[in-house]
Length: 357
Length: 46
Image 1 (cartoon, one colour):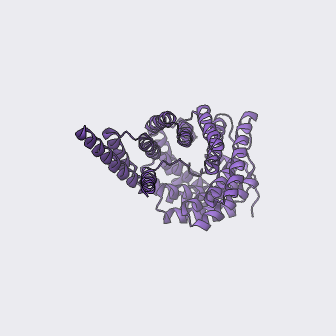
Image 2: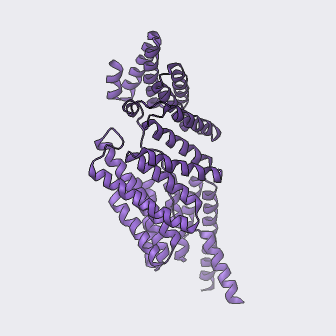
Image 3: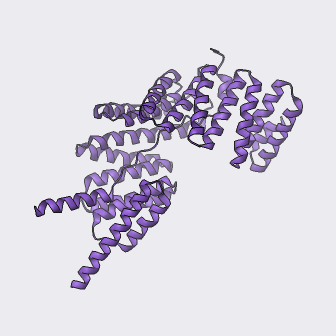
């Protein structure tokens, strides 16, 4: 009996050590390494079901950040089952919220709403205001994603929406507003920033560009308050996009320039390429074709460096158009041909047709 | 500031509807739970 007790203690200690290392790695952003330690901890096993629930939950989150959503779903489901088994209501709420977020990313919106709503119900039942606010934000995100998906299938213009899509996006704003109200009460500025950002994005899809700008400006101000450069870059980019739809192209270029500057600071080449593309397009709208060429070329070089053939094709198409406007037909033809080749290579039928025109 | 038609811009900008704020995942921390347990057992010994 003594030997068995000793073995049990050793197993518990080993499981805990492995889990703590997994947790340390995940906190440092090494999710791959973290999952290896957490999975080893599960292999060793523990009789402490609350520890096991925390391990499953963190495994689910790590796989979520690694974009392995099938595995994330599996672990968050294990966590939910376990939390229910041990009667841990707050734990059940958290597992439901995580499950909801994962189902949302997988496009399973109706199931996601059920899970997020359960998170909300449990948080309210337990008087957990922080959990309640987070659940409201998550439900808003599910309706936003659902609305956006419906939007792709039916319209070209932001704001030109079918009633069903409008209703879904309106629900998203309702939940974000409720979230905002609560996080203001809680004095949680970081959460207010997130609510403002997504309210801005939802109003943008609804075609309420003036409202969208108002919210993105508030988001920007909180991002600056925290020195959160990634959020600041996001806000500038979203502000630029909304201003384009109001026809305020010069101000849009100022914001896209800030986006470009911050992308470079953050060493985010994908966003740098996106900012160059937006600047190229905005200078085209301003009929400043030389500057448009300058930015489309920058976009092209980064796309080539990143081996992003879709981006490269887009850059060539834009360059072809800009050179036509400048009367440089030789260069226009060169880029139109490149666009055609890339479209054929990646099987972009629309691109191919556009290039042939 | 230019106030030209927005039609052209919507054709050029295939925006995906803006960049979203990050998701907030709920965290269950092993170390926090362990610390609480440890503190609890110390308190009960006192």
